[in-house]
Length: 298
Length: 261
Image 1 (cartoon, each protein chain N blue to C red):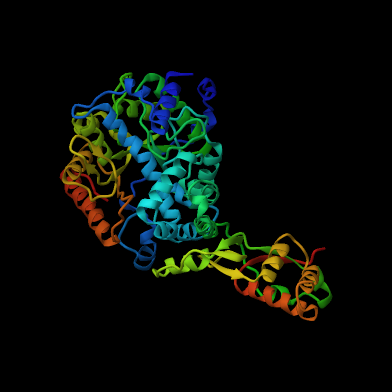
Image 2 (tube, chains in turn green, cyan):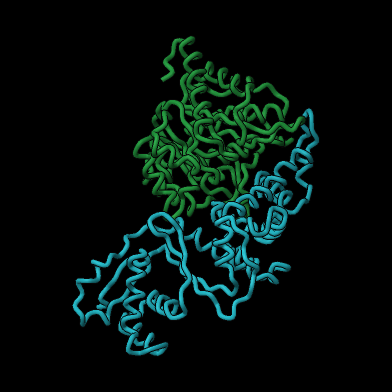
């Protein structure tokens, strides 16, 4: 039995997830390879996103560097292990560590993924897919509410790249995300690359996904690269952003307006200059689209 | 069990064991069969964890080479499903695995290198704490010294190895050809810690290792001197103990001193 779903939602705590996260501009995922260059050069990056788990350690260099960087840049915490859709009991040790880190970092927001990472005490360290059923929706809504109450703030949840679809799904991914956001109050991180990857893998037009997400719930974009295998795409986040994803980003800007955007490279990390070129391109595309649409790019 | 719980159970089992029951609930895509698509998850599981082991055990990876390391890594993954949400802790049991699993148990240098790397990794992100300075101990009256107790810095770790893992590690770190692995006549005592932000280690003589271990257990300085006196020249024991203590303090190995009251 899911006890959380049987309990009335605390009205006092329910007020915590309020206030739309601010627009931060055009950012980059912080990687250890770039620590010294960032601190020495103060590159023109508006904000950094950090992988929460990399800093959920007792002390030493990771936290020291993070402290230095957050003195100069706005920081957002992005996790990979919240496992919000898992049917295993919530890992309160993990949540406690996440909350401690948030108190230290004071991030602009905390994000993770709409996925699960394991059950029965095991962790597969992957962003695993869920069926888009009403049962799964009820379950995830109750988990999001619990985590938001625990953290005292609204979560931001990201769509993941998926390689399989379940035959018992009762709605589309975008319908699931929209309803999750509406019912739980969580905000959405729209990973443009992940939408592109999932759309290719499952044979639908990514613009239908884009049109299906409520514009006022999206507070962040991710842009990344992938590996094309011919009949499917693997989301590796280890390549530059491809032209199709840049085009989808432009379409997302038209749909969602001014949204905090960042380049996310997780492997085969190139020199900072190379990533700065991509960050600059996010800024240029936003300036072109949003000015044409009568909005400030920031 | 709910449908979602059962499905997650089956999905996980399919990744970990290769059992295919969950495939009946998965759709083919317009361009690919479901087993190939599910294979992305199966392949990612092992390769992601072995990759994390390469990161944590960079020099063991250099020592073994890609093929041998990955074969070893896959065996470790099969034997040690991850139970922690943070992959940082996944390879913690590697030294014990290499000490006990065939064929690696026949090459004790592998376990020793892994243990040294684990200690350095642990020192790297160990808890922060103030470091004791020489000025902190000069204020004690001479008759208080016998009762002084010392607290190690949280990053400090002691380990003993039975092989020449230490010079092998150093050679690999410097991109030099490592010496042949040998079993030592006597165990090598190693102290690992973090100075400023940098993890480091050094070998200890047996006497200093004994004094460190006892000091870390809270044995007061006077007793430590008496213990050293049983080991070698009794008249020089206090001076030797003071020398070891001086080295620990200047290296940032101690966190605090108390008068033992």
